[in-house]
Length: 434
Image (cartoon, rainbow, N blue to C red; front, side, top):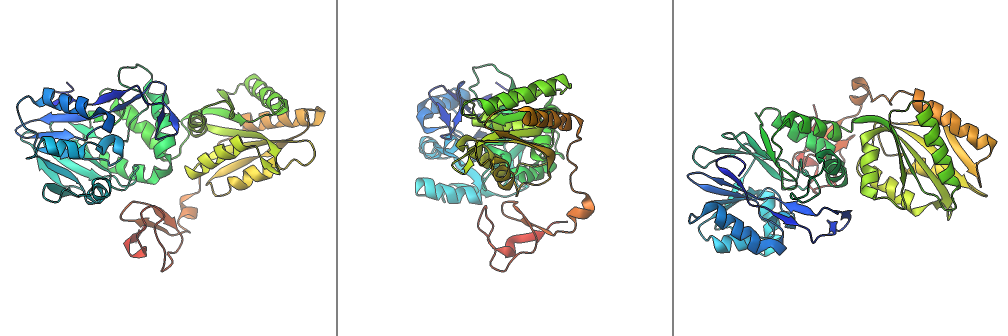
């Protein structure tokens, strides 16, 4: 029981090895569902299809002989929506409450949009259960276009969909920040502006608890979690330090980054994180890159390109809108080193990156010249302030248009045949940002 009227009815999954087919989850995963029991009963989301029976039993235990009135669908990913049909078959009088986009997705998933039993809601709509009045907040692209959140004014609870979630089952105790950060930047990180838009809506609410679709209910120090989401979604620096991400074939690049780490620590760098990309969890490496203010990329020239693990890592950063960081580069090669230029080009679309003046070049193995470059890079990283963001005057030089459907931001004029890259709508559904 979370409050007198709010009960947890979710499940833990310890059979899963990869969440969304790519994120390692050694501590499993939780699929959260909740029941608000009032004059009318609302069930908040369903769970993954493997847990149909367990979830329906949890509902039965929570409501007893009563019949739920509503199933509120915040998010249509199958780990939260797979049992919509099973619920409606079990409770034939219940209505399903969701956004218009969600019902379109139900048609795709189930072959029906449940038109005879649906309640379509939009931003600001309310649903009265008795003493619990629910207010719905649309949250497009956090991190799917159909997402809604719900605020319960009675218990001051925000049902936040996938936001504020984390990896790990609820019967495993671990620190929230680490797995929530890895979850956020792995899954939601691309959509910082959309998260910022939802945080602005949430700022007007008195939120005492957050009930996400993954991870624990957040009851204490809620401002701390909201503050972290504000930092993460604005691509701010959470902690001072240097992440050194590298690949090495025969150990020479590894020797260089270990020397750099030593030099940084000697100069008093507050935190140095050394990550071998070939042997580390890529999502954790991405998490660290977004957490700290400075990043060093070190790799070998490989097939006239860069080592595959480094290439994939930079791609992960770029597609998540990596920005506002200081970058140092170390390249290795025995006859034609070109890794630094390739890495820099791969990051060319990322905003507000400041590259160090020093680039370390290793020809086969460290020598006096490259050791001196490592020393210079360490000095530069320890003495350099974080890259300054664009001034407001500079930002105003470029027009920004915001998609009214999903919140995507487009910089520059909108061509007549423009289509939103996230939801596909045309320019007539974009508004000029203030």
